[in-house]
Amino acid sequence: MPAPLHAAGVRAYLWSLAACAATALLAMPMYGRLEAANIVMLFLLNVVLVAVRLGRGPAVLASVLGVALFDFFFVPPRFTFAIGDLQYLVVFAVMLAVGLIAGEMTARLRFQATAAAHGEAQARALYEFARELSGVLQSGQILDITPSFIRRTFAAQAVMLLPDAVGRLQPPAYGADDEPPPAWLDIAVAQWAFDHAMPAGMGHGPFPGSRLFYLPLLAPMRARGILAMSLEAGRWPLPPEQRRQLDTFAMLAAIALERVHYIEVAQRVEVRMESERLRNSLLSALSHDLRTPLTSLVGLSESLALSRPALSPAQKGMAEALRQQALRMSTLVANLLDMARITSGEIRLNREWQPIDDVIGCALRASEPLLGAHRVATRLAPDLPIVQIDAVLVERVLCNLIENAVKYTAAGAAITIAAEAHGDSMRLTVSDNGPGIPPGREEAIFDKFSRGERESAIPGVGLGLAICRAIVEAHGGSIHAGRAGEGGAAFIIALPLGMPPPLPEAEAEAAGDDHE
Image (cartoon, rainbow, N blue to C red):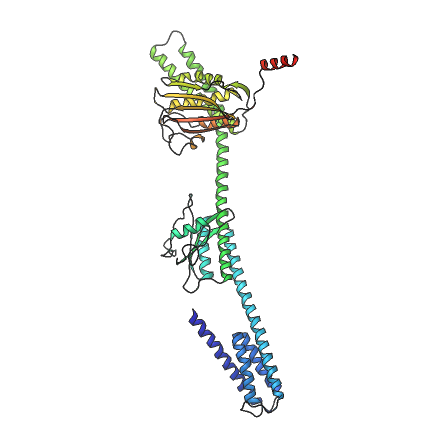
C-alpha cells in the first residue's frame, strides 16, 4: 500500500505544476490589457481550485509557484526575477498570504466534507446492518448477515463461531454456495478470546502472531460468540473510526444473538406451559371419569370372591387377580387426580403437631400388602421431636417411596427407613440395597411422567416421585435422591421442625410453680 499512496501524491503535485503553467499561459495574452491586480486574481483562483481538487500540499505549491510565475512573466522587468518597483513586494506578500490562507481553508473544508461523507457512509452501513438484524428470528440468519456486511464494509473475510451448551465454540458450517472459512482459522485462539471476553490475534492477547483477528461478541448478559476476521497485510491496525465501527457491528450482532436466544427460550416456555395446562386438564378429566368405574370393579371383585356357592380355587384366583389389578388402576388414577389437584393449587394442608414415628408406622401398615418378601428395617433416633405436618399426605409420601423401592429391587431386598433431627429440620431417609438410580438422573426422576429406567416393564406412569416432591415442598421442605451406603437408592426428605406448642403437663407444672 505505501507505493500507490506515494505515486498518487506525486501525481497531485504534478497536476499542481500543470495548473500553474496553464494559468500563466492563459494570462499571457492579457498582459497590457488588464491591471496586475486582475492577473493576480487568476493565480489566486488557481490556488483555490488546486486546494479543492488536490489538497493542502499542492495548494501551497501552487501559491509559491504562482508568485514566482507572476514575478517572472508579469512584473517589469519581465522574464527576470528582478523587481523594478518595490510596491510589487507588497503584492507578492499579499498574494502569497492570501493564496496560502485560501488554500488552507479550502483544504480544510475539503477534508471536513470528506470526513462527513465517510461518517455518513459508516452511519448508513450501521443503519442497514441494524435494520437487517431487527427482523431475524433464527441465529442462522445472523450467521449469514454479519459476515456479508463485514465483507462489504471492511473488504475482509469474516466468519462467526457460536458456542454449544457447555460453552465450547463450534467450527463454522458452510454449504456449497458459501465461502469457506480461512484455512488458518484457529479454534483454540478463538476459544481463549471467548473465555476471557477479550480480543485476540494480530497484536492482541497471548497470540499476537495469529493471522486472524478474533473479536468476542459481548451482549449485556454474556459473550455470545466470536467474530473472526481476515485482513490483508498492511491494513492492520484499523484506523480508530473503523475500529469503533467494527466494535459497533460486533455489539449489534451480539445483541441480536441474545435476543434470538431469549425468543427461543420464551417460545419453549410458552409451549411447555400450554402442554402442562392441557395435560393437567386431561388428567383431571380422566381421573374423575375413571374413578367411579374402578371403585365399582374393586367392589364387584370382592363381592364375587364372597359369593355363594363358593367359587372354585381357579375362579377365586381370577377374582383376586381382578381385584389386585383394579386396585392398582385405582391407585394410578388417584395419583393422576392428586397430581392434577397439586399442580392446580387446590391442595390444602391440614397441619397438626405429630410424632413422626406414628406416621412411619401408619405408612408401613398401609404398604404391608406390597412388601411381599422384602425386609423393612427402621432406624429412628431417640427423643424425636414432633413436627407440624399433614400426616395423611406425609404418609402418602412414605408409601410412594416404599412402593418405589419395592418396584425397583429384587424380592428379599432390604428397605431401611431412618429418621433423625438435623439442625432445624427433621430428616427422613428411605433407602434400599437395589441397583440404585442411573447416574445423572437424580433430579430428572422427580419430573412428572419420568421413570428411573426409560424403557422398563415395571408398571407405573412416573407420578409417584413427582407427587412426593410436590407434597414435601408444600410443607416448606425438600427432597432429593442419591446413593445409599450399600449402593442402592436413597431418598432424603427434610421437613422444617418449627417451634412446637408447650405440652399440657408442662403448662400445669409452670402454673403450679407460679402459684407457689
